[in-house]
Image (tube, rainbow, N blue to C red):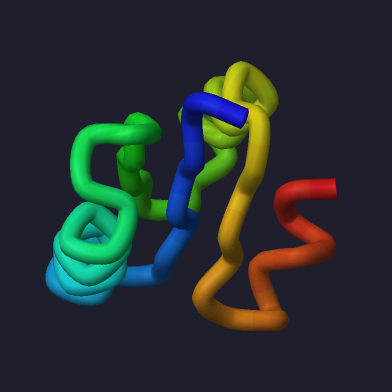
Length: 62
């Protein structure tokens, strides 16, 4: 597992999760975030692990 994506509803939340995870994992894995929208959600499937900040986003990502 080399790449984690955090999917959130708002940019500040995504940045916060990303920064916290980077502090924990350092440079061992790549951590990105995205704001959930129908236009960019397909990019999420390029990651090894997707962390979703809000349960309401699960159906949208499925």
